[in-house]
Length: 467
Ligand code: SAH
Image 1 (cartoon, rainbow, N blue to C red):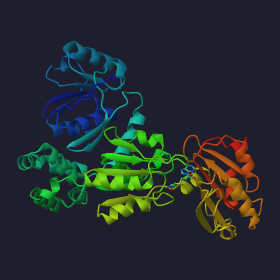
Image 2: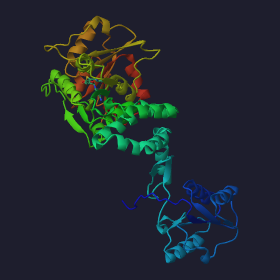
Image 3: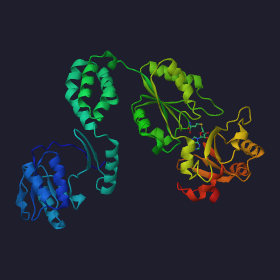
Image 4: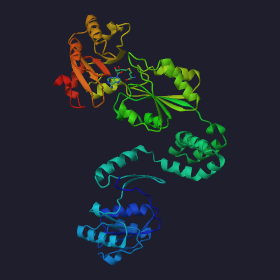
């Protein structure tokens, strides 16, 4: 890291800007926002910078710059004239006097830079690319700005106001941490965000005397992680993962998603593999109960959507019967993710008015499905876990009346950078798949919508069937 980020208190301190154009004005505004006194020296100025200088208690000097204008009492100087050589001279003078300088035209001469600021006073978030790309910095700052509710500033102010009182009332640091976590992730924060400050304060004071608030309470979050691309995680999933202490995850949860979960959490792999049931379902259900009873917040992270072929229902049944609080966060199921990322709309007015999700898992070596219903016209059939049963699926669909030329797609590792889409007909797909080295997970989509892939495919550039 080349630069050390620091936050300086410059309230009422004098700072100098040499230059009076647009960039100088932006800098003056940043400095004024931090309550400093801004002096401006420039032959011409914008109306705005003149107003900022005056309101800040500083002065505007309408002439060109002299080296003896750089007084040692300035905390820092911004060289913002439109003449590069003048800026260099200003920088040299500052360096001789030991005053930090920022040169707008040359970051190599600058002692410090101005980051992009996301202002939720008293919370401040800053973003810098060390002058590598101001546009990237701005883009990132805009994203963060959109993510952080405006109310966070008010929340921070509330905490600051009550910190001492809480410290006096809740003596144990562990209990205090628990108390604040509960305030920040519960009702009180929600009242602040919705502008109901007085109700939030009332609840805060009331909860101080409630011992329940410092008793660890376990909770389980059954969270859908989506099909693989970490961008498909919902905001809610992300938030609950952050506030969990333990994460129980499956084989289907992608590495990329796991790497985004904070390293402070206990990660427990409970994945199941076809031939190797590493943790039996009953044990997983019990593990969730045990952690929650011990007062832990546990995230049960599952691939796709927890309620679609995910045994999510079974996992929360035991929690419900034991009255352990839980929340369920939907995820993007493989059918939606793979369909979108391979340009195959699951319904389309010209092709399919309904869609069915089925599992193609083998039971005693065969695939048991309501074949007569699956061959109905104008329908898309999405088959999860269908790789091993593919030959049987193909044979049965044709035997029950599906046209053998019906388009079919096998999507391998959908939504990830390794996604591959194999397109064929329901008759020929098994041979095509057998001739490739396929890596699970895979999803099968059958129906005339599959023909749209060639014109609607947008993600990635490798479609093996096109080669
Ligand atoms: N709950 C999950 C499904 C679990 S069943 C969901 O809603 O998506 C596991 C099956 O889902 C896999 O065998 C495969 O058929 C499918 N699947 C999950 N992720 C996938 C992916 N990224 N690409 C292709 N298929 C996927």
